[in-house]
Image (cartoon, rainbow over all chains, first blue to last red; front, top):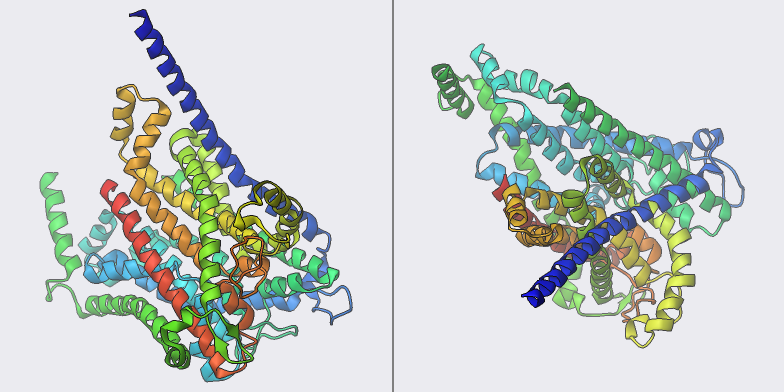
Length: 288
Length: 323
């Protein structure tokens, strides 16, 4: 009898120890996962901040061999590309999202939803190749427009799915109230449902913008990059990300340092967007 | 009260489905079909993408056919194109990424969903999402200047000293190579696998946990039961991570060394399908060269579509049941 109980005790002890070990391992893996995040932020800030000055934002890149200069054209280029992508991608994504939320409970809606999810997994470089065959080959030269098309392809899935989810959150009673007042369904959707979901949809849009603003691969052979000032949409255009790529590979220390600064600017832009999103959603939940 | 809500639902049902042509006007139909048109556009976009790339790759497809992916000679000067080194590089680097990342991701997901208190889970989830939001190019920049030198001076000498008898850890430590690519990819896929696995774990009904605890299981034994309930969803999450690793371009291009060779040593430089596109597309001068590259892109597209389809189906099968 006493033998049995010590055996029970040792089994219990083993289970208890194992329990603690495995739980600590889970905690450890969470901590390990944060190490690269911290390292990347620390390096980007410490290496990038050294070259961060007003010059970086308002001057043009200097020719090879001269130090200094800035990336004014690349910052504007990134804004132009993101705007072009948004101009094409946002309407398409939002309207598709409206369809999926309001009419999409059928086989067709299911297919569209599934394909959007699949599309969001397509590598960004593939979007670049498609924009190349669609725009660059017929136009016979690289252009900001081609870059915008590639970005639009990447934005559509995110925008579509968040629009759908946000519209679905709007209570049914809102639609019923609108319809009960004799307002046609399209007006109910656009002026009541969409307006209620507006904040959430903006969140989705900001997330999509944050994502494409950091894209490099789809721009390499669409917008190409440009060391000179250009806002023409049918000409090649520079962007922060492509500059980082070129400057990181370059054998000049000055350029490498500027790449870090560009990375810092990019990361601040994207973090600002994602913090804005965080605040927008938080206040929405606390209001309820 | 009952009567009122009953009629309200009936009224809504009629209006929304639009089966009453007298009540709902033409504008509603136009609105519905206009939005449906855009939805159809998204479906068509996927088809169009495939078609455009097929057309772009037609020259190469006609000349090489399927042997394109079995030939290992990539020589633009002699106009010989074989994509095997890229396929090999993609498979090895993605596999390496999963081997490193999967145990960690599941650990983090379990910690977030089952162990961490709510006040700790929220900021931690946010940080993991932040990791997913860092642009690929910044991983690449960090890779070139921080990770690769560290791997060259610490990791690779350590591995060849202690595990040098394995064929994977032989040769000179360049730093730029398959190992660096695998490590940087593992950092990049971790947030995806983690956040989806966490959602999948959270979708397992609470009653399962209560039942396990009620019969005297420890916390970890409960977690094992939850994990086995969620395994197909976690497998789906892993596939999504794999899809990301396969298609990841910039960071890999910057650290893998970009040499079209097949070597079993992880220290040697390699090349992936995505990185050959990033690296050579703008330099490609002849039509056949461009066509061969688009052929690579087409394969990349097809692979990621298939991987993502399976992944989505697996994740849905778990979260739908719970929802």
